Length: 183
Image (cartoon, rainbow, N blue to C red; front, side):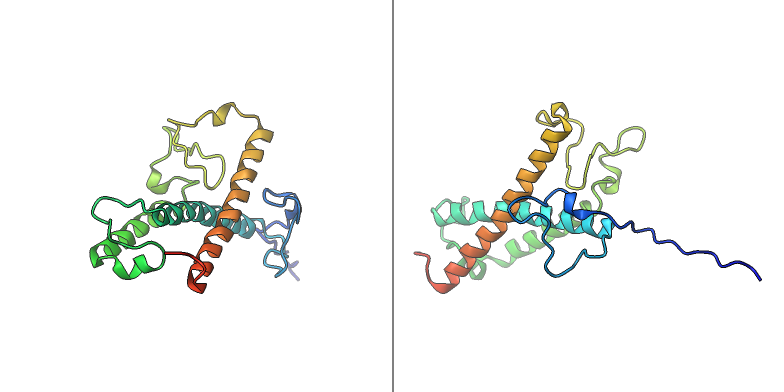
């Protein structure tokens, strides 16, 4: 009788407690067991999503506070801040926002490999070191001069700031809905 061929998984079980983001004071924290199986590919995808949402939240907090302070683009001086702005935006602005969001999502689906091949060098390689690295080989603000430890520290700082911004925009939105924000 022919011998059975063993099946192997392509997902390696990894010790995720040593990954970027498993930091003090909580360390590795997965109360829902989302990555309990140790699937590194799934963990990396979730970490990229966390990084992306953190970056968006940093922009959201900045935009919320700037508009709350009364700063507006020319032509939008009469649009209120906070949730009230959503009801006062013209339809064309909504269309432009949705089109911009769609293009950005499409272009960055797999930016590590190169969106539509745009960030590849002559050998077809991406200059990105990790998911979320949008350098294009032209401007790197000294990133290439940093040691690996310094790079990991900078990435950890960005991840923590993104986490704080996500909580910050959530807090601002909740307090606005509760009526705790002066208009």
